Length: 306
Ligand SMILES: [Zn+2]
Image (cartoon, rainbow, N blue to C red; front, side, top):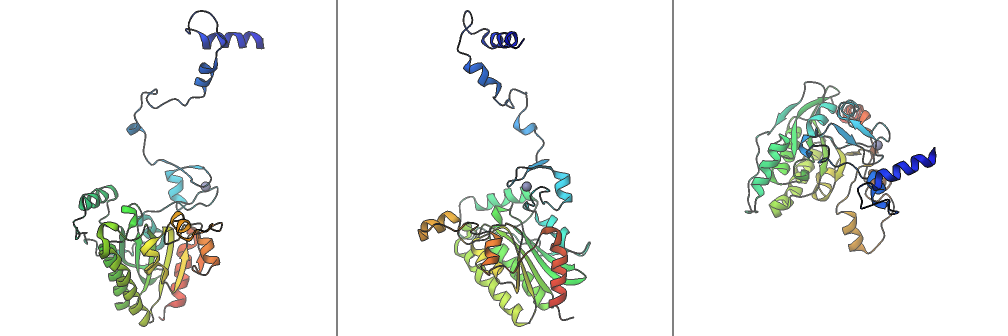
């Protein structure tokens, strides 16, 4: 029976390959393992529904968009925290119905004449529905007033140009004026190269605003999310009175390859993860997304005078 099956199948594979049976069956058997192409199924890439299923980059678990949204974009198998868009994060931490956006209309200008910069900004505006890489506004967290800012990595890698720096600064100044807590969620590729030195200036500007906020004895909580790097790490995101981070997120200044090439040293395991940073004193606490709202409202309660 087995033999008959083997013969039948070998015939099936070599059929049409010249005259008579041949011993060379490698090609037809390999063809069995080939993944059918989209073309073969009569589908184009554009026909596939976009963003419905997500594969966890850590454990490979496939999750449906609806499930993932309900679980605050945390993998059910390994607790990997997927990146979040600004609106989702605001919904996650602000008391329902309390968020009022500020400075929504600020728009980038091409101060240095960088080729195609404004076209790029425009295309990201259309893609994300955002005007810039950060959303700021007043909100209440646990019933107490706060001014929050949430960076959105989809917008040009949430790089900090003049508008991002200005929005962060204005948010801090508003909080100082209204005696509220500042809560900033960082995620950034660093300074925006299209704006050159103008983007580097934002580091000093945001830090200055935080210094005045600190002199007024008002709290600032910084939350680092995946990935926080470059000029954002080197300015407002690591100046918090309390610095929180999401589990296993990447925190650093330059990328690991650049650090390795510059220092000519092998990097320790877990380098640039939130856990590594906590062990070395940069981060105060790693907070799971499920506990973020409660942790923030408890911290604001502890640190507010009223
Ligand atoms: Zn996972």
